[in-house]
Length: 142
Length: 156
Image (cartoon, rainbow over all chains, first blue to last red; front, top):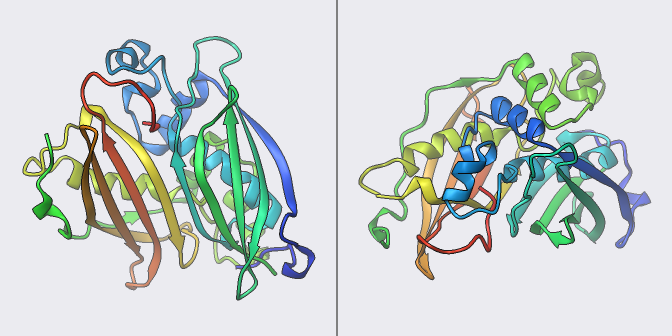
């Protein structure tokens, strides 16, 4: 679709503006409702521990959605995303307190492709660990 | 227990149409904290060349995962859903999902593997609109963790 950012203005290595995303238990309840994913590991501490998790964990798709914003805010049109994929390497553990967890996302242009497309590689960190692996988006620029 | 390899390549019938509503997109965008007006304001969407508000890039998962439920809960396959976490996720878009779409999903099992006691299932969901045009394909890797192991990978 119509990205507002021009392909010619972007180089390999161009860094996208980084963003941080707070995640609390309330965030997860809200995401569960909106997405229809009511798996209790995202809201029930007792259940999460019973299946071997350290605590309630964020929906991977919530983390993936947050990371996407670094790309869509930069490109100008979310409809310009051609491909987007991630591997969920570590869970985002969300304690039951006022702070919750914070996911920090940075990204840079890794390759310029044909057809005015670029590949963006993303890094998402939480509590000092990479929570996404192979996180890549292909975006068609103007 | 290892899953039956004969399920690889199996496709499930297309789901009933899911009608994408503006308010559902708004609710989803708010839940991910994304204030981009292209998700909520039809005029902002039109200014970017979209006929109506579009959905965030990860929105299609809500539809494809529901469709994958047919696969995951297929009693013949025998996956232990209580131990399933999300391993990988990928989307390839022909165009963004938008309000007014009536979408169907066709799920196919692409691969079944067993690794260190974990059952790993790759499911592809092809999403088409009412006119039969391709909108997005979603690839989902699900990992049914072996009992009594830690939480080394996966999300949920």
